[in-house]
Length: 136
Ligand SMILES: [Zn+2]
Ligand SMILES: [Zn+2]
Image (cartoon, rainbow, N blue to C red; front, side):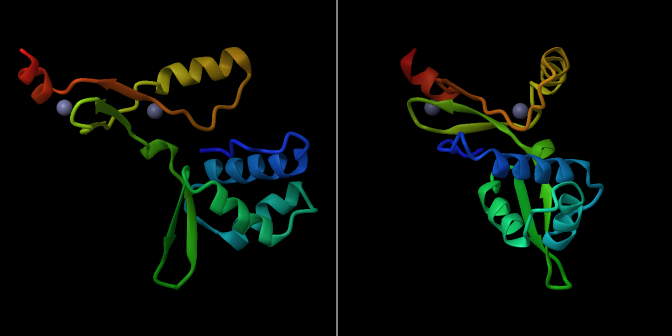
């Protein structure tokens, strides 16, 4: 989830955050914070490494952190691996939909609106097979 109480005037930090996301999206392998820092710094020289760490924390819903054998944490964009859920309103069970139904639509929306989509959420509510059986 991207910050909901984001300060509108905080343009600089939004710009840094978007750049970090872009770097991770374009990366072919997981990157360390230092590697992300060097890549972001190329374009935004005012960035400091603590900004990278702070953003990694803020972006943890779309970025996965893994500590490797060398003891260094590496970060990876996770959008490809996200899932959606069918949530039963009666028993609260949630069924995972592995395949994202929005991949194609997102591409179209992005092209038509020149909008870079970073994240989306979808939860579908209803009654599961077991709960429907009880009702009948
Ligand atoms: Zn149910
Ligand atoms: Zn999706």
